[in-house]
Length: 243
Image 1 (cartoon, helix red, strand yellow):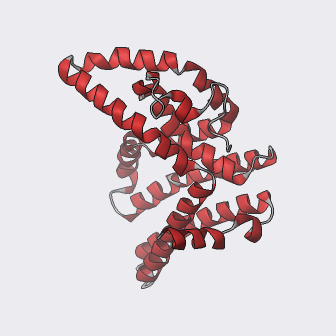
Image 2 (cartoon, rainbow, N blue to C red):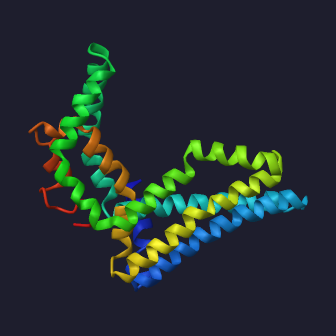
């Protein structure tokens, strides 16, 4: 399995297939646009009652599977998987400690755990300011795509569009907003000279690393596989960037 995956990664060799960073950014964004357009085509054939819906569904499935495989390979290239694996001992042990504290003391046990963890890891938060555009994109995307926001959109549009296909179209249009924001942000990162793999890594790790900094109470533990230095590196190390 590992050999086959390595062959796939070699086949997707970015430096050989896409020699410039600008081309890597452009092809990646184009792939996302094609996936989104396929969703529109699926909905369009459904609204118009054409007989192409099944075909577009298969095309969409192939594209989503391809994107999933591409994402796995990119995460191996830029070290996302290795970072997430390093966090596992701390995440599991911190979850056990928090659950045990809530059982014994109650939810109030979360307060000192959160305060101590944030204070201990406070210097780590400086690294997020080096990637402000990406952090802003992640926050806005989370707000737009959250369950609360989607419920709000549905309640707003149901009054004017009903609960049929036009509502689905409105929701699909809203889902384009994060893609437009991503296009703007990636163009900006490319203009700064940041590599494509590093940008994907930073965008992916913003949320999990932040959660570890806030909820990973076992980062206070000096044991090697639990400590903050094991997960993030030295205090001034930019753990969102590629090593």
